Each structure stands twice: as structure tokens, then as C-alpha cells.
Length: 414
Image (cartoon, rainbow, N blue to C red; front, side, top):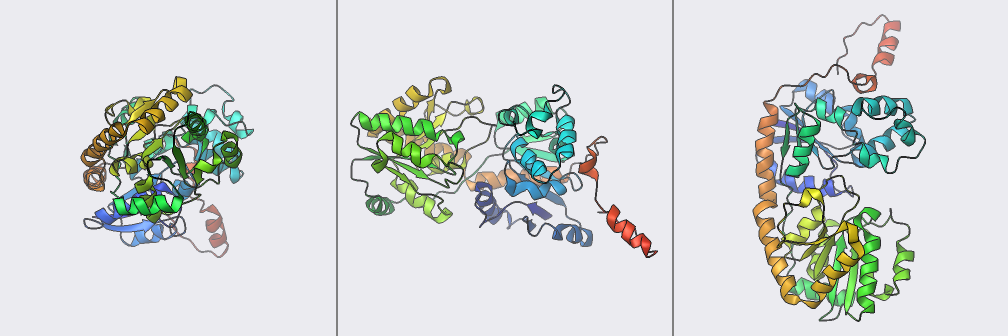
């Protein structure tokens, strides 16, 4: 089977890029796969004309790294893997940055016909903020896909309720086990200056407010004031968190906090090896699944997660949960427990690693993909009739007018 695969890929700094590099290494054994990133997507049309693809796969997320896919989604329907079950942040930014406010209005009202009149104007006037979490901007994607996949069965069920008639499946997100050997642990902790017996907490991934960094810093500073020997590692790109240095300074424990900035994929294992526990918090959320949490599980590290509705099926033995309604106290209680109780850390680490091995390896993920690729390729191509005009426009009218001036008649179909 021949596949066209739309996704960011390394060296793009994106968790989805890394995810796809790991996944494609598994799927290349079974399929002929042409990769299309933002700078090569223009080659897709002529390649598809020369030899049609059996299926187009879109790895779609709520970030600018996926903007280029919107030109193809409706015209070349395929398997859409939704990494974020809300696309409003990225889609609004894309349209507004191109001066396409009218297209945004049309698309918003198509996606959310029941929204109050004038609701789109909040975003048009630069007041988006919370509205982006209440309105997902998904309908165009859902109704033009042959099949939609998400990484959580509860999210899949919610989407089926919202989009009856759309084929929606849940697939496992998988991450490989990294080298977290004792020798690597000792070497990295020595380099960082973390003494024996000190508990090192770590948060991985791009540093954003939604990762609850403020709450983590508050809880950590309280722990240190109580006399606990602990360190905190913030391992990820800090470019979207301009106030981080000031917040670290305000804790009074800045000499115990390491903010690495962006780390490449090859460095993740070393920092995981050094860590004693991983803090994988999120709020607000659109129902995403955390790859950094899975890395922590695979490494056998105890993890702390936000108590979110779509994570309710995760056993209590696998991770400690933080109550969003009492976040500061709940998080402090969790990290105090982990710092004080090595046996608890070990038990959570073992249970988490067993959970990863059963549900979240790259082999499990690849098996899901093989099943869904076959399923999507067998499904008919949807033909919604009332899509917004800018979604179906092929923008060939200018070319046609130029050719007509030279009495050249053509039949352009893209």
C-alpha cells in the first residue's frame, strides 16, 4: 500500500515530529510512504497525479507546524490523526496572520452554527483567549476525513457524540524506552551537581503556563522551605514563557532549580535517568495525551498528573493525581509524599512501567496504525456539500485567466 504522510518531522522542534519519526520507523516495513513536510508538500499534487496514493495520512495538531495541511485536507480526504481535539488556537492564528478575517468568520460559523451571533468577533478583535477552548474549530476536519483517530477512548466517545456519522477511532500513543541506566543517572546527576539522597523532580516538554509551571514552582518552594532536600529540573524550550526567570527568582530557591532550555531528543534519556519523579500537569486542556508522561512511565519513574476527566481510566496505582480545585495543596502533598517515601516512588515506577509496556509502546501504536490504515483506505471519500468557499476554492482562476489571454484552453483539476 502506498501512503502520503503529512507531518512535521525532525529537525522541527515538535513532539509530533518526534512521534512520527518513531512511528514511521515501524511502518516503513509494511508500506511505501512518501513524507510531506511544509517545505515539500507542493510535490504531493503531481506525485498523486502520476501515481495515486492508496491513502493520505494527516498528523494534525494545534500548532503552526501543521498550517500547511489545511490546503489539502478537504481536497484529498484521508486518515486524520488529531493530536489535539481542538484546533482553534492554531487555525485562528493562521487565518488572522494572513489577513483572512472573513475566512475565519465563515469557517467559525460553519464549525459552530449554534454559537451566539457575533461570537467570532471576540477572536477577530484579538480577544480570543478562553473562547479558543470553548469552540474547537473541528467540523471542517471531521466532515472531510475518511477516518479520524485520537489518542484517548473518552475523547473519541465525546467526538462521536459531537459528530454523529463520522468514523472516529481511538489509538494508543506510544513512546520508546530510552537509556536510563544507573551509570547514565550517576553521570548526569554529577554534572548537574545533584547530591546523593536528594530528590530530583522533573517536568519535560515545552515550558508553557498550561503545564502548570507556576503551581510547580510554588509547591517546590514550599517543599524546600520545609527543609526537604530536593531539586527541580525544567527540561524544555522556554521561549513561550517569558516570565520564567522572574518566577524562579521569586521562589527563593533558584539555586535548586535547573531550566535547561530546549533539549534535543538524544538528551531526554539522560535527564530522565537523573530524575526521581516526573511532574506531568496540564490545565487548561483540550484532551491531549502527554508524550512526556509516557516517557516517564517507560523510564520507570513515578509520575504526577492533573486529575482530568479524560484520564479517569488510568489506574490510581500508576500515577498520583492533582486536584485542580485545590491544586497548590494537592500538588505539594504529592511531591512531599514522593520526596519522603522511596518505597512509594519505586512502586509507582514499577506500576507505571508495566502500564506503558501493556498500552504505550511504539509496537502497540504501530499495530493500531496498521489496523486503521487498512480501515481508512477501505472507506468512501466523504463529499460534504456546504463547506466554506475558501475551503473548496482551488485558487486556479488567476492561472486560467492568464492562459485564456493566449487562447490556451486547459482542464485544471487539483
